[in-house]
Length: 379
Image 1 (cartoon, rainbow, N blue to C red):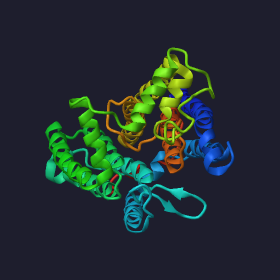
Image 2 (cartoon, helix red, strand yellow; image 1 turned 90 degrees about the vertical axis):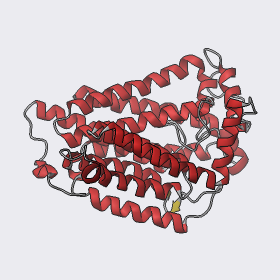
Image 3 (cartoon, rainbow, N blue to C red; image 1 turned 45 degrees about the vertical axis):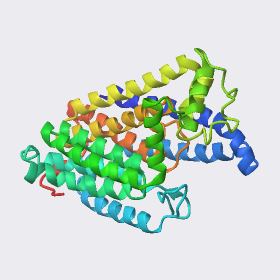
Image 4 (cartoon, rainbow, N blue to C red; image 1 turned 90 degrees about the horizontal axis):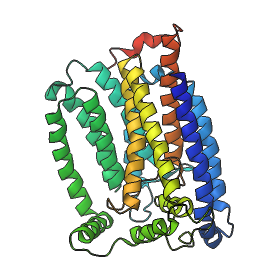
């Protein structure tokens, strides 16, 4: 288990280093044009990477059982934060998703994802004997999911809301919920998401554009088209770091959600496959950590964190290659980031702590005073 924790750390560390290189390449032209400095966005991202690495190390040494008594309070604070975002966040590109707290701008949806995974893991441990009962077990968890994801959908942040529902229901299924309850909830969620997507012009146009390109052979979304040009230009071995043509403002904000296109252009098919393998390694290591954790809370928390990271990576790559409609989801560890990168690193630190704790317990070392295992704590 100790080796698994180290594997997760170095895998994440290497992906962040690669992200620094690609962000520098993808953002330099835009930084010169917008801020009169080729290093402006790179320096900002570098600072957040340092914060992220510090967060991984710090949270790797905080016993994950400590989150149990804080879980419900964190959920209440997160809900309030999402309501404040909905009411007061400035409208940027048709959505109010960010709050300026002075030293940095935060996106509460990124905070909500981790907090909800922690809370659901606790509730699944607490209600493991009734989770297969829809009214007394499953419904209680699903209400929390719909409150948090609903507030995110209303920002509007359709993609993050959808991802949160998918991750949460996957976690609940792994926690013992019945498949028919999951499918019914997906159907209900799908109706809510569909109405929300049709309500907001930007999401509606993206969906109709994607459907048109699939069914009628219509034109692709501009960003997707440029991303495919970028990936195609890379060939097998790539054009080399810093030699991308698409980062010269052909692909809008290439350092963000579509950074995989620049990565594919500069590192080629081989480099892209290696990056995908790195995510696969993280998936396998995380699942093994979850399987070997000594308590149900640790198992579910490790599983939820792992699935959330890998699912985000899969969806980002699928969007870049035109398989899914355009979303605003970053590529984990690699995209230019703020709150998303910091809380991603916090999640990785927690995952590493679960691995280290299991290793110590296997060797008969009491790592924490169990805090009475947090058992009996209600959501």
